[in-house]
Amino acid sequence: MPHLTRRSLLAGAALLLAACSGPADLTPLQPVNFAGRAPIRLNVARVDTVDQSAAGAAGFGATLAQSPAAAIRNWGAARLQAAGRAGTARLVIQQASLTQERLATQGGLTSLFNDQPAQKLTLHLVARLEIGPVGTYTGGYTDVKVERSTTLTDGSSAADQAQATSGLVRDGMDDFDRQFEANIRQYLAPLLLP
Image (tube, rainbow, N blue to C red; front, side):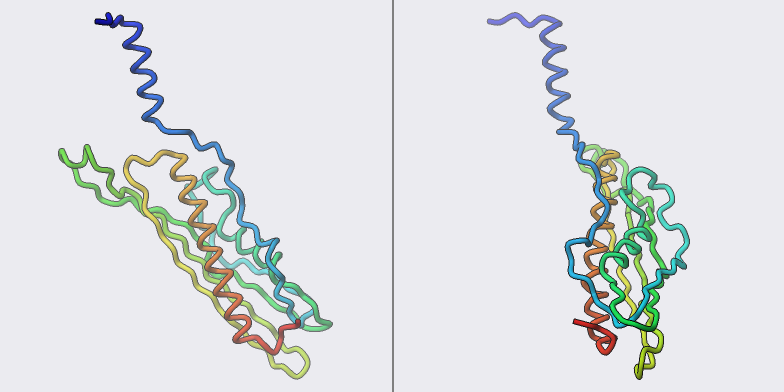
């Protein structure tokens, strides 16, 4: 029968703790990027971006690769292209916020063995594309509104929160892109160029 020493027990405990902690995810968080998508060519000479949103990601610090407002600005720079000779389009960022809310958790013996939702993250993205008069077209606008949320359990690490916030912004901006492009093509079709 093998004899267990204190040294072998400590080494075994260290290995067990390392195995239970799981792999550290050191993947750097990347900003949302729309550079690979085809531009939406507008029959205007200029596209301006106006940010009317309040700073809306306070408390997240380094866990965000980019703020929601920066993600919308990057979307506008990558997707909206001025291809005409006259007129102006304005991308107005009305709301771009990411909030966190503490959720009530249950105590007791059950809570020791089950992770419970402890924090809710909510993303709000609201924007408008306004186009003034161009030629015989009197102008128009279209809006987009995206809301997404996710929860984190009471056992979530800082890396888990960073991945959740980054994923929330990425997924929300994918919805934003899809919905806004569809709205632009439906409601501003006379001002689109091939």
